[in-house]
Amino acid sequence: MLGVIGTGYLGATHAACMAELGFDVVGVDTDESKVRSLSQGELPFYEPDLPELLAKNVAAGRLRFTTDFNELANADMHFICVGTPQQPGKNAADLSYVKASVAAVAAIAKPGSLLVGKSTVPVGTADALSASLPSHLELAWNPEFLREGFAVEDTLRPNRLVVGVQSDRAENLLKEVYQSLIKDGVPWISADLRTAELVKVAANSFLATKISFINAMAEICDASGGDVTVLAKAIGYDPRIGNRFLQAGIGFGGGCLPKDIRAFMARADELGATQALEFLREIDSINLRARKRVIELVRRDLSEALKSKRIAVLGAAFKPDSDDVRDSPALDIAVQIQAAGADVVVHDPKAIEPARKRFPALNFASSIDEVLKDAEIVLHLTEWKIYREIDPVKAKSLVSKAIIIDGRNALDRNKWIDAGWQFRALGVSDKEA
Ligand code: UDX
Image (cartoon, rainbow, N blue to C red; front, side, top):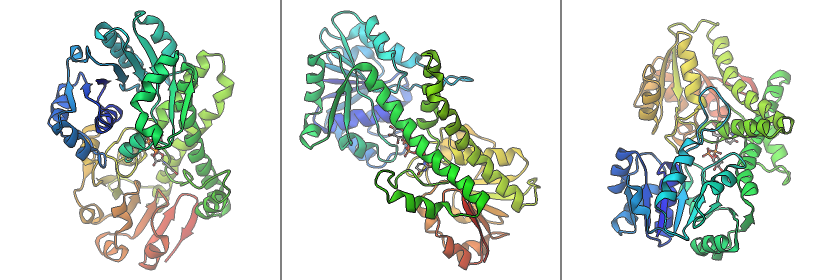
């Protein structure tokens, strides 16, 4: 039997996928409403393919959820999947949920069972937690690399499995659990605890760096008259560079990349290695600057005066195929423009409710037609497929002024220009109809 502690994105996905692999799984969370809905086979957030997997395994009796840690007493392995959010006003991660769940599991775990951390933690955390455990329990770290929107795929067909272990026994137990994935050829990397913790933050720092690199090139294109979309395509053909994560636009957000690079910097400070990660400070500021650059474009088009101007925002989620609005660049821009006095209306196919919860003062539209109606400028900020399918001719008949800013460089520019729109994008010089 496997225990999964924390049933957010990571935990709910891991629990359902482990049950899908045939294990008997118990998920524990302190949030009663989450446990109630998961127990009924209902997912409290949007993630493609996961609802089916959850419902199927709950119905098969292989997967259940509870608020009671005692129900983990018989588990052979306990996966710690709780959040490590950014501490308010600081760069460092809040480890209180990890510490509390390790303590709660330690109190009930049967001798010989293995605790496996999956949460993203600062290097050294696992060593410290391990030292706090009674001698009959052992800790391993098995970082998770799942992307929202592809959570099931990334868990059942990951591009690598990384385990930080302190004994051959722990590694063998983990190999048993992941046996079918290993058989499918998923690379297995065994490391010490510290390296395993570092792999996760290093990977996310690299991805953030790639995005900020191309956004820095977008700034240079804006200054010089180049086109960052062509530039990205051209450099991406070099296999040493690769074409993924080179989409210039309003930058990265979400529950991982921004807080992970900040927590990594905070940990480097503690380790006396501040300089090694100084570049991440720049990565963070390039990223936040992209949001400001969109607002500058809006101001330029509306002759600086935002007051009472009707602005349509397409997208609230931090990326498509997700209803996650944590540190969403789209919402941040919408809120900043509204704070400057504009009349902002936001549309998103999945994230309106979470967005409303976070920013109740924003206005939301439930259809694309409604959000476009009478707009003086349209901002495309999350690249949902449905936005690429908008007919620019029809859209033009709804708005008051046909100006669009493609904050994700994802729309078919020529189609919009041919329909008579003024088309703006980051890193691409203006093209008029
Ligand atoms: C990320 C990592 O990819 C994943 O491995 C890790 O486990 C968790 O963090 P996720 O937060 O789901 O996953 O999103 P990701 O797909 O990485 O996108 C992050 C942000 O970068 C989004 O806001 C996205 O819009 C933005 N992005 C991505 C770009 O701006 N340009 C790109 O080219 C790619």
